Amino acid sequence: PLSSASDAAFQDHRLEAAFSYSYTPGVAELLESLGATLLVSTYQAGKLAVLRSFGGRLSLLLRTFDKAMGLAVGPDRLAVGTNHQVW
Image 1 (cartoon, rainbow, N blue to C red):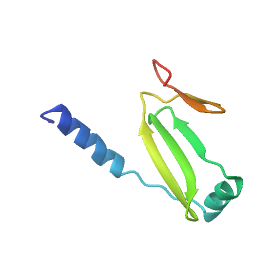
Image 2 (tube, one colour):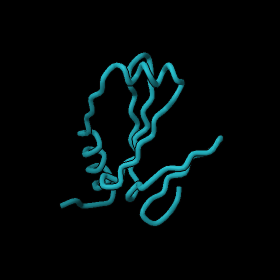
Image 3 (cartoon, rainbow, N blue to C red):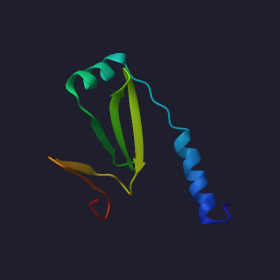
Image 4 (cartoon, rainbow, N blue to C red):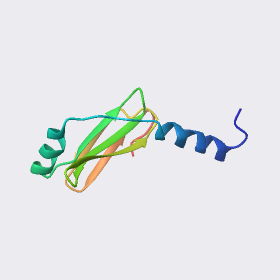
């Protein structure tokens, strides 16, 4: 069992580090040519994935939310809808 909140955070970090993904090279090329970033929310895993092209390769940033249910985008802002609130 975990002995403290910091141990729990460390355990969560280790679980995040175990995540892996694969992609076709065309995805990075497409995002780069469009000058776009792709955001994907995952309800069951509670993740927000941010994908962009960086140096001709796909870059992935993951953030954890309590049931990330959806996204709304405006000209200068982003909202993430979760189980009980909007960020």
